Length: 210
Image 1 (spheres, rainbow, N blue to C red):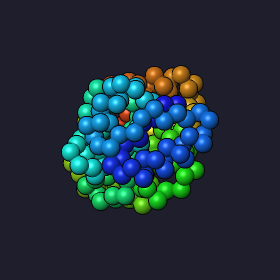
Image 2: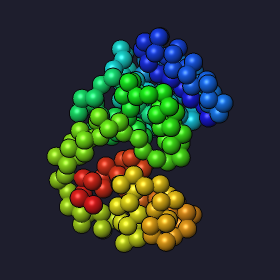
Image 3: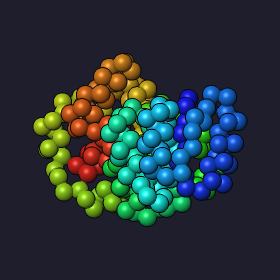
């Protein structure tokens, strides 16, 4: 698994690289000190996942996340920051981040989040999850009927479970479907909702009251 680090503090970049290199299946392919360099290194190194800080000089992490997801929609971005302000959290998810962790997260939890994110799960630090849900709820202005017009009944079932953080395996067991069928439904949902990952689909589901 190729990982790119992006943080404006050298001590954080170096420390995180040392920790991640302890995992035999991780390879740190680069370390960027701002958003501009993160975009450039993503073009060059083609990482599978980026650990992204948010508040940086020049191009911040939200701007970099948005640009990277536009250029490389399959790259996963996991925010790792000290900032838990509501605006930062929601903007990062809207920009395309697959998860949001704080820097005081234990190392093993970060490792689990990296592997889980690559498997399609969404990780949001418990300290900011409530803020994200509150922000989504406060922006809930569209009725669920809008989704029912776009999605089939089965796709709505899948989306409801996806919004609860379930994996494809979990959803398949719950709905008595094959994992392949669930994957097809998830792909159709993302395309119909015009979003790039499960986290953004889950946010839309909550916004529409599912």
